[in-house]
Length: 79
Image 1 (cartoon, rainbow, N blue to C red):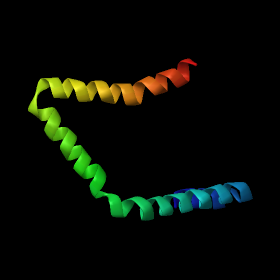
Image 2 (image 1 turned 90 degrees about the horizontal axis):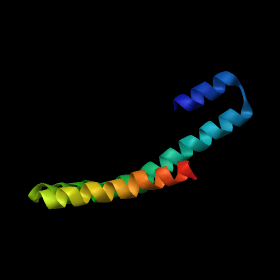
Image 3 (image 1 turned 90 degrees about the vertical axis):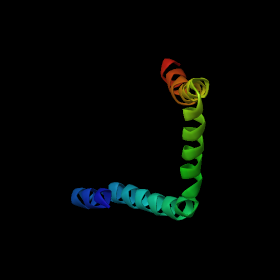
């Protein structure tokens, strides 16, 4: 909503269009993912439970997290 206010202050039609598309994107995202909010919560509980059972599992989850998050970003920026 603040993007719309800022775009209206500039009185630039492109900025207003981008702000409204951003608002629509956020609304559709809420409508799509809010009913499915139990999935990431249950997944986080599952991962936390498994990681807390042993050090081996904790190291495994940390390694998977690093591989899935930091390695692709590093490859993009080092390219």
